[in-house]
Length: 109
Image 1 (cartoon, rainbow, N blue to C red):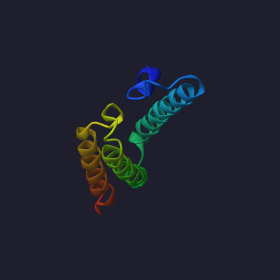
Image 2 (image 1 turned 30 degrees about the horizontal axis):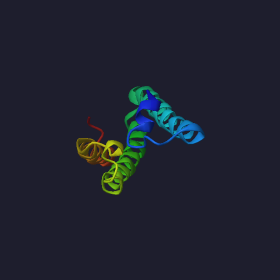
Image 3 (image 1 turned 135 degrees about the horizontal axis):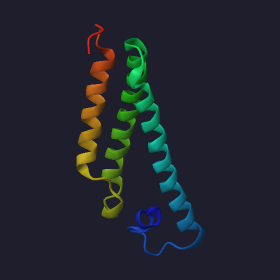
Image 4 (image 1 turned 60 degrees about the vertical axis):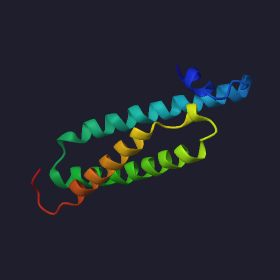
């Protein structure tokens, strides 16, 4: 599956270049599963600890949003490699929501 995504828009890619691109896509997928496992494990933390994890997640989501936005504009010549525009909106909404919750002063949920 990573090979299918890696070659989109880059049909002339072969050999080691294709393998490097496949490996990069797989690494991104593995990191996504890693982050999901960490956040899933953090769901039973005390409020203050959970807010710290959420604050870190909100910073990460802001970085993801900035990166996705950058790729929307920088990859206009290769539309197959662009992230879908709704994902930028989803990352932005999640970043704002997680920032709000992590910075909220009271301990209510």
